[in-house]
Length: 152
Image 1 (cartoon, rainbow, N blue to C red):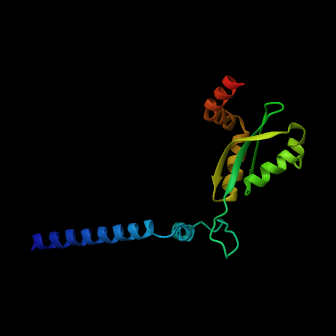
Image 2 (cartoon, rainbow, N blue to C red):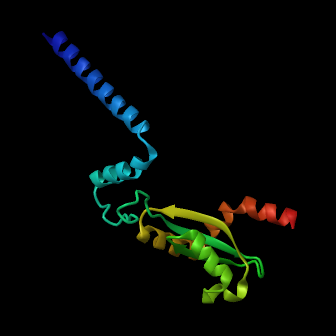
Image 3 (cartoon, rainbow, N blue to C red):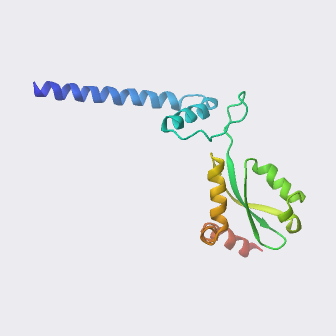
């Protein structure tokens, strides 16, 4: 009797495992345009995802919020900020539309991080602007700085 119960549990475990493998295979073979909705649904099942923002409903692209570091080629100083459109923001910096970087143009993007949540990007920007964050950046960009010093 005990052996049959163990065998039934083992078979049930195997069947559940096969079902999950089938699901993983189906997810892996979905067209890419369905993945953002699928990821959003998975995140909703964990809760607290109401701040994930999407493009208009006819698009399936998620909006990322970027924390970025720009290097002034004029004075060698860094500027740290966040945005949801990195290319447009870099262009604004280089056209002089930002007061704090207007006199330090041209600017070069040397580092960025992407977040799904705007609050996370703001928090990361705040962290990178303090002493510990600047130390982190200097360690993270050590190879870039050495490369720049070697070739300039």
